Amino acid sequence: MFKSPTAPTAPIWAYSTQLPAYSPPPLLCHTALLRVAQIVGNPKAIPPVPALIPIGRSTWWQWVRDGKAPAPLKLSVRTTAWRSADIYALIESLNGGDAKKTGG
Image 1 (cartoon, helix red, strand yellow):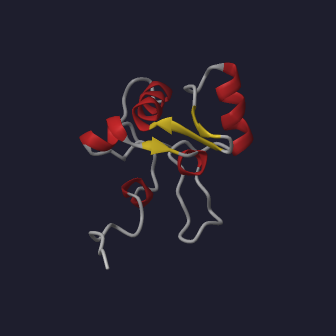
Image 2 (cartoon, rainbow, N blue to C red):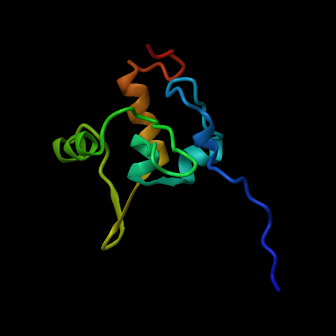
């Protein structure tokens, strides 16, 4: 039977609870896709997924409609994702261009 290489149990961005303190690895920043639950978080998931952008789901979709958030990629009829590079660019713009700024 084929045995896949071991992978971390949680995505790398799930370990950071503070939005500005997170610095993604270079490859992840340009190649990964993020779903809405990974962007706005999901405290009911097991394990809980911390938010990259601490807003509600409905606010996120409003931002997408208004053009404040990047346009999504439609992967299938019921699957939508965003490029992680676009999300991190949004985080930098929300922080005034400083991704390392501490929140508060």
